[in-house]
Image 1 (cartoon, rainbow, N blue to C red):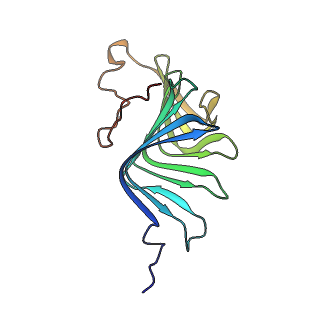
Image 2: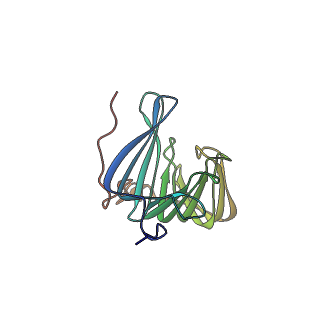
Length: 177
C-alpha cells in the first residue's frame, strides 16, 4: 500500500531545537514542538511547523539580533524560498522594536518581509498601527502601507505584562561561544 505524502510527512520530529549556519557561522536557532518535512508528491517541498515556532537570528558572535514567534509556520524552500508565519506573529528586531500581526512573509530570495494584514509596531514609547508592512529582512528599514495612527504608550504601562517569551514552546538557553 502506497503512502500519500501529501498527508504524511517524509520527516516528522517533535520538540526540536536546531541551529542553522551560513558559510560555517551559526545564524539561526529554531525551536518548535513539531517539525514536518513534506517532499514527494507535493508541487513544492516545504517545512511545516503546525504547533508554533520560535526563531532567533544571531550575529557573528552569537548576540541575538532579532526573534520571531508564530502559532504556525511554513517554509517553501526550493523555488520560492519563502517563509509564511501565521497566528500571533511577533517579531523583535535588534533595536527592540516589536511587531505584531496575524500573518507575515519572509522572502529569502528578495530579502524582504511583508504582510497585508493589520499590524502594530511598538517603538520609542509609541504604537504605530495600520494595514500592510514592507521591510528589509533585518526589519530595520520598514514602513506601514496604510497607516491608521500612532499612539503614545503611557510610561507606567511600558513593559507591564509584556514578554517576548513563548510559553507553549520550549525555550533553550542562549547559544554561548
